Length: 487
Image 1 (cartoon, rainbow, N blue to C red):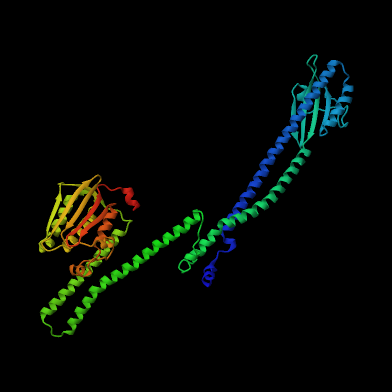
Image 2: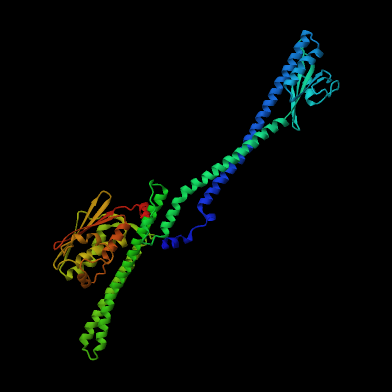
């Protein structure tokens, strides 16, 4: 628990937590939605009821104009009609102030009794006297003037004027808006509290993952590894982190092993040089032949160190994947014959014959000629080193669909199958004593594999102890540039 407390001491504060940021984002979105909703929805609502009020006022005024025309045609006294019908109608439409004007603009009836007998002339009245209904809205008052047309001679005999105040309507809309805002506020409180707990529940796995990561180098790591019933993003994060960690641990082990191997490989010749040098220093009057022999041994050890360093540099350059292959088209048969010519003195010293067995006089491939030469040279050099005296090396070149098959076969000592898995690892040796005698660095097959991989090819091995070995390289005839970039 002490370790757990120590690991948790760096917890992110509440005000910097992702939980709070998500929560504030959701709240901001909710508030913005409420503001937009209130503004646009209530504006649309107010405009709707205003249109309804205008349409209702228009219907009422047209109805009165029609009834007055009918009463005039029937000979009913206008004053009697106004006294009976208009008073009843005024009570039904209390929000309206209604006026009846004659064809001179004189007020015959005013529902407010304020302008009876006076004259009223405005733009709407003038339009109505000309035979056209007109309306206007000013300072919250909706005005409408409808002409009264005689049924007898179709002359304009008067005007129906209506004045409808929108203040009451606006108050009603405002009241409804206040109610909705209050509802949004209280509903928002409920929603916000619910969202907070929901967000807290959904982000809780992050705390488990963070605690697990802080204990990653602890023996208690597996105990605190988060487990999820559903394979969601959190589970993928845990799996990805664990896999990345395993990969890093593998790289770290490989690095340590590499450093250890390099140190060991360089330490051996250095130790030999030191022993030989000390021996010479201790022999004050040693014969010249002894000095010569010891210096030759020292020179051999220096050559061995030089080979190790050169192979290391070559392998490092090959493993720098950002360096592209220097691709060109060339004849694979010519390349192998050139390698044969260069290595034939080494083979002849031990009576080893080298044969190129192929049906092709030429076979064009697209590859990095320098790197491919290095790989084939290493395979043939190994076949010479680990062959028997008076042995034989045969290189077969075949062609399949899209690939060239290069097989290097020897009649050497062979390799047990148990070594196949590690055969291409750096510094791996099947027989360390024999390797040091032949001057091998233990990097040759690693270089071969790296070159083949860079060319998107494959390499395999078959071997029988005491009979010989066969190394086969499957090389694409043409390189896929996009595939190469993805390596």
